[in-house]
Length: 197
Image (cartoon, rainbow, N blue to C red):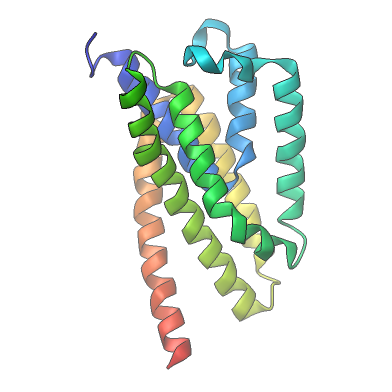
């Protein structure tokens, strides 16, 4: 078994793309993974212990959870409350998504990489989007949150779909997203510092 064979690299790219998507919306990439596992057949290989995610009960449950999450983010006050639990949930979802897609690796390597790369990526994205929504709430009284919420759902959708269509492109988009997240984090930090002064 080679650590850097093609299937391992492609499964890593897929996992990173879905994990970053979980930073924007927790359930949307899980739902996308469920659809991909159910209808993708041989096109989507999952870790053996995660084959159940493609079942009808899993797909329906994740679909309902996705719909509820998307709608809830458009309700004033609820969107900010969701942000308080979104970062840890996104980290868990990112870890699960990464771990479920990694192939041909040992358990220890799989979960170490899933926690660090998958969970870390999702948490970084989610933390920054939460800060962006807080700034939007503070500066627009919540009226600008509609744009932020729509952008997050669109980003989660694009990253999820791109991950399945061509995982290397999703990885490039994640790198760009993480760079933008870093820039946004710096800007929000500067904004909050200037507000306190």
